[in-house]
Length: 202
Ligand code: S3P
Image (cartoon, rainbow, N blue to C red):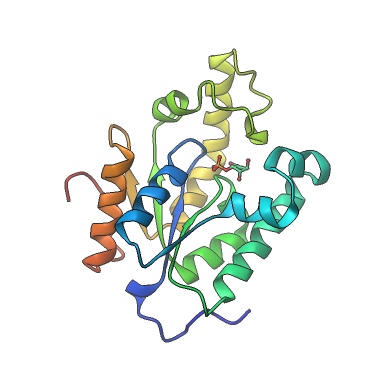
């Protein structure tokens, strides 16, 4: 696949948001899009749902997780090779980086922010909201402890993948979505790149 624009400056790369389910990627992406109006917001799950004409649980049910991961990779290839579109803010899925090829595409073609959260924060955000998330479906919504164990075991496997993919890490515990979006805007606009960790305020 041809890179979107070999000559583009680092600070004009697309912006991608990664992190575990419930960390706020979609909400932060929506706010960031209002702060950076020249950018177009692309939510990878929505992109895939529209392309398939099915929602995420239907895709998992009918085709399985491996097929969904392929769809994520194909969607990223399409998005990154479209040189005609405006700069994108990409809200990715919580498991997109579990595929090595997706991780490499994200790292190469975007300035990638990992919204890192503790289990407590994730549990607070996901409790009562695990429906529609097939990777959490084994955790019965009524059983908070089951959900906690599911988050912990997935996080153990995924944490190295988030860290290996991200150019920047934001510890989001206690921050509002608006604060997180403001941090990302600041980082993107001041060209403070390749600094791995942020706390609020900058
Ligand atoms: C997934 C996360 C979901 C969605 C799919 C798989 C995962 O996105 O892509 O259900 O494997 O963590 P969100 O992180 O937006 O919930």
